[in-house]
Length: 306
Image (tube, rainbow, N blue to C red; front, side):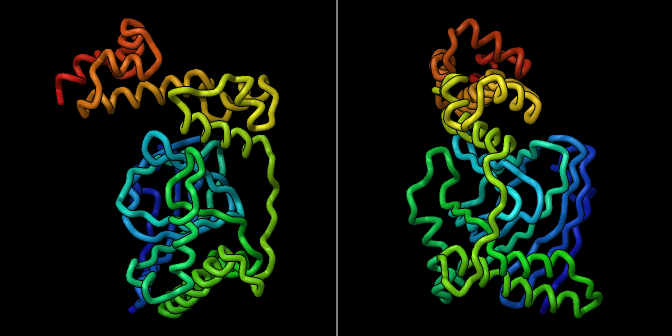
């Protein structure tokens, strides 16, 4: 039996204030769940939610979003990119939208039991889990350009005009068609039309890559000049663009990552205050000052409350 549900902005408490969204969730008899819709952001924003264990596929029809998993794994998706992610366990994921935009996405969740039954799905999961993890990238995560065929199916889902029971049946059928198309394109099948080539090298893409590098290397980050070289921008353009996009300087961003990492390590008893200060790259006295300014309590207070 096909089930259809709708999620509006008021039903998603973790979205940033001032954001609106509208999603449709379709669960079919095969256990594949389709979630499609758009979130409208009037300004840059971020939110955190828990992503469940299993196999996820999807694509971005419009907009850009960066994702962090834990302290060191980060990646991003842009318009006309698809992905597959095999999650061994549920995780907290932080999403960052770098600018005011309409973020339009389509996600599919697939039961793990289908992997054993369908070679195509198993092979695609192997792409995610078998390839060496990109430094700083999300583990078991593989992305690729969207093919013209997958884009056409995705548009049919996004633009569906059917109503009533027929809508659910139509979207369930299209979700299976999209699943097969994505699985085929990820493995480069020759009968799938060539990928849609979306513009690369824009300032936004380069700055999102800079952020990903800083997330992965926050304990020993590159210098501003070295970071600019790695993303192909001039230093002044990178620093100014980073501040505009993410609301803080590169230095402040790295400092925040270090302090957040130290807070977690102290709270969980992994480090002493002196060790946390060293791991953050500060003297103990300066670390305590920054820590209290950031969290409103001393490192010692956090360490003794565990």
